[in-house]
Image 1 (cartoon, rainbow, N blue to C red):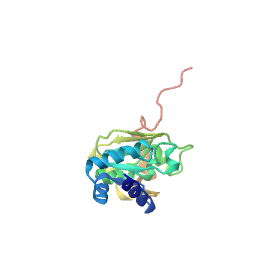
Image 2 (cartoon, one colour):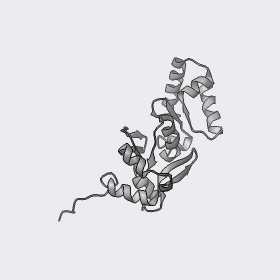
Image 3 (spheres, rainbow, N blue to C red):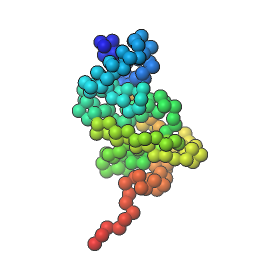
Image 4 (spheres, one colour):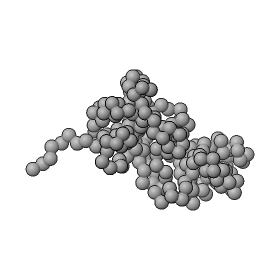
Length: 182
């Protein structure tokens, strides 16, 4: 379907490297079956990736080599699509604040509900569950920062909240409690 390829090019030209299935159906005016086949063809050509059902990432040539764009570029639109609150945290937040000596291998996000991890190409997105009442208490606007990306701004834990999260979720932050064996 040439119309889907053109729709994807138009989205990229407007700076949006993602789209939702319902938006594409409305814009293209095609049947759901036709759109599904076109989406599968684009995914087979490594031009599309889907972290969640109904949400698609348009892969630029530089992203095709690693299988997906950096999650910082699409976490905010994904979470808005899913209608979930979130906070980029732990090692990725520490790297954002300049406290990491290397880029984390996992993009960690704290959410107030259970969610499955996403693995796309070389990128891994891990959702860390936090009790909704605790999430509401600590994720206040004055304790959050903004991570600028091409898709807008993502919510990232502030310095103090990052330290608290790393202490609270030390098992997820890559800190080992085992003593080295002699």
